[in-house]
Length: 95
Image (cartoon, rainbow, N blue to C red; front, top):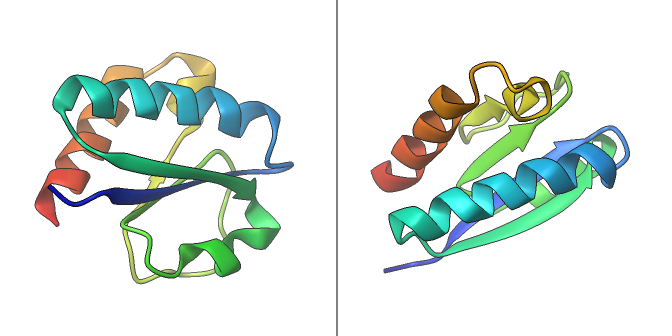
């Protein structure tokens, strides 16, 4: 199975993206998905998006990307977290 490239972007590339990346990593392991997760600031996203399978962001994106973008806010608020995990896993299994 090929490795999925996921980019997690937040305002600073440190705090919230770490929480989100850890939860995505855990979910991918449970599902047997090889995932390479990169964290960055949302302002650096353009440079990391090339070749990525999925973007998960805790902030609003101004730019459009040719790959799926999923909101990572449920990981921070705790509301809708399971649905977001399901959405991420489903998206990764498509490609």
